[in-house]
Image 1: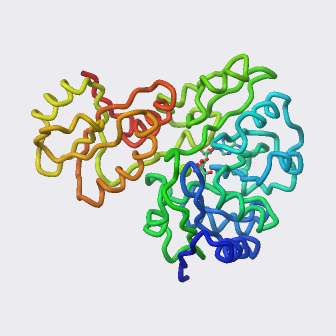
Image 2: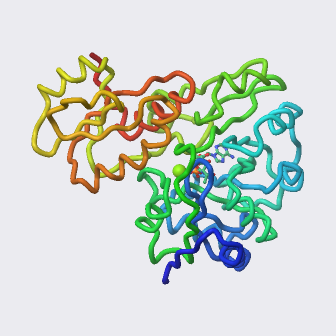
Length: 337
Ligand code: TXA
Ligand code: MG
């Protein structure tokens, strides 16, 4: 199959939408990362998404709506807390796990009786949903296990020849995937995957917000998880990633002892002055690090890095999302200095 590159002009968005309504799959920009979109109500189309990504069948897809008011058409009930959260955070990078109804096929929900609902704020994704006349199931548009795509070129690299089209909507604004939450009770949200809607932000609305323990620690084989995605290897480039928790100064001394031919260091922006070994930087603040992390992981592969020591990010605020992605990319290999 030839994969065509579309622009974000109205005629091209109409073309993308008609691929979706016709049962084909398309790479689509969102404000978090690029998604691999299919008609969420069409089991055959959704199967093509799992095949293109090489994704395990029990890992559910998020369903993207043009407006939260559509959620009632795909769920059996919506908690009051979800409605209040939607008013505050939709459209935006928040996914809420709700009880699904029969309009969402089991393939889409990975066999679960719940569905992750998200209303993306990216105008291109929004317009494609509207024009398609359906709702769009979209996982991140990377090959399963590889870092998520934050540019159309990343999607092309992973999906060329496997999907109908990629829509170029520029670089993703946030750079990490949405915050995924479920509800423990009427007042308590549980974060299943941290993102740019932080615990602190959720606490403006929820009485309590629990951070699921699988976010920062490894899930044992066979252990029961709140979200299937927690079980799988994620975000890993070909290079061997090792996270190093250290001050800028200690990281520099660590580098002196660990430099070798295929080794790169991933530094905070601002720490690179006179750094004598091969390096890249990934931003200064947590927001910048979220924005750059996945593209840097891809660039490190392109540069031929075999081993990468990363100066660990903060785990405060948006930093928790960056930390969560990196510790998985590192297969939980962390050196503390
Ligand atoms: O920002 C995002 O969320 C991006 C863009 C494209 O919207 N999408 C995305 O989808 O990251 P994906 O499939 O790569 O990650 C979805 C995560 C997975 O870890 C999955 O296990 C979890 O959300 N998830 C989806 N539906 C769920 C459900 N019903 N219950 C528990 N976890 C769910
Ligand atoms: Mg993903």
